[in-house]
Length: 119
Image (cartoon, rainbow, N blue to C red; front, side, top):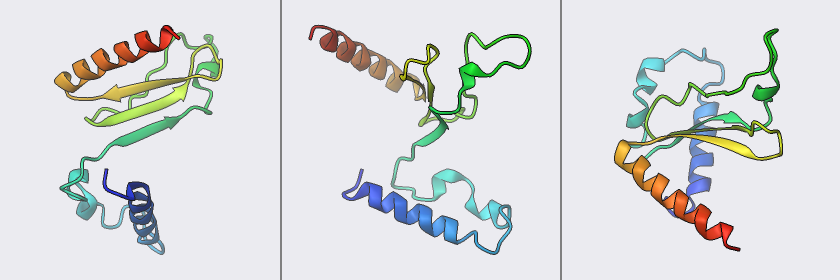
């Protein structure tokens, strides 16, 4: 990430939101797509979800769900966040990466979990 990356992202989001004032949400949609053309030199990561939505607590008449998946992260470089199933205050993360990146992530994540469990 570039220096002052968070400030850069906040500025770009502000510009995009202000650009929607007095316009239809769909106006100019073709010009805004594809997403990767916004900043071609920057690897973009997309996020979806919230850890405060209560997905595991939803009951539509057939009981609470045993598993919940966020399906809006069907593209590479995306992640989702939601509350943990046991409602202990933890979170569940979903992640979409290229296969070789996912293998590396899994390897590194397992190592971190093992090293933290020793302390």
